[in-house]
Image (cartoon, rainbow, N blue to C red; front, side, top):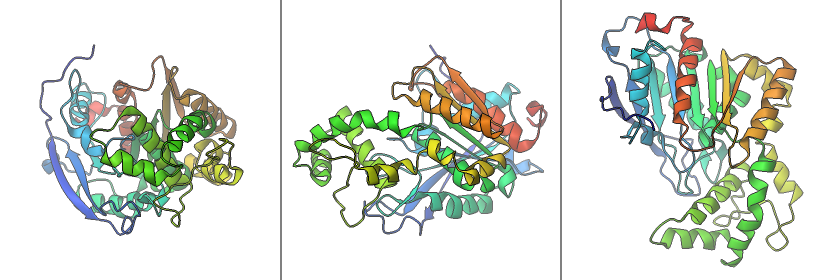
Length: 350
């Protein structure tokens, strides 16, 4: 059992808000003003040099802000940063925790007229604002993006599509291999939608009017969020078309192809994406060997493709599943710090 960290964070936690133009007009009606938490290391006011910047992308059903809260039998991310620094495993960083939650339950961090232009938000609004406000290294060489699950997917997308803007990417159990990850859920979703007249809008209204959100509801929201991210149809909203026939569950090849265009396993086949990954100082990914959503198979295929293409990376598979694996941050955070700071002895800057 993990030991609870009773020590309060040693640095300073600040919050600010961004009035995002990229998120204005999203069809969900979610707010375009977004809160961002930022953790600054102890002694940051007296530092003579700027710090590496890490941006954390939360998993589905979560917000970056949740990573700042109290944790039972464990520690939150600021406490983890403090501990790793005290142990001499890494030096100080500034870490940002944007609130990217949506009313569909989460985010895939891609541009969508339904969900909002989240790729654009991260690159064109969040990063410049962080560099303006805080003493961080300016430019790609000092920036890292990290996430878990959907957030790990978002981090990979940043590397594959925008690697020239980042120095390092770390993806923990990120969404890889859409065929194994999603297709098994389509029959259950078709059956659920049948109870609501085959309309996603009816399902959404039922979930939102219920006294609590059930596990089945969360799973349906996740699939609707994927569809609204990967194959948005603004003309159909509040219905959200899915890539299969609701009566026969047969795949719609055109819609499914549009989903696959966002699959990192497809993107990594493109030389332009590989070239962006080659520009990174660090590309790290891991996955549990017993991930119940089958991400391990996509992760293995992704890593093999990187190896064949000669893309420097670090892939680790560990004997666990998809939940309660925050301890893996003890591996990635020091690696991110080392890549962005150029220090082989991180304790030297502690």
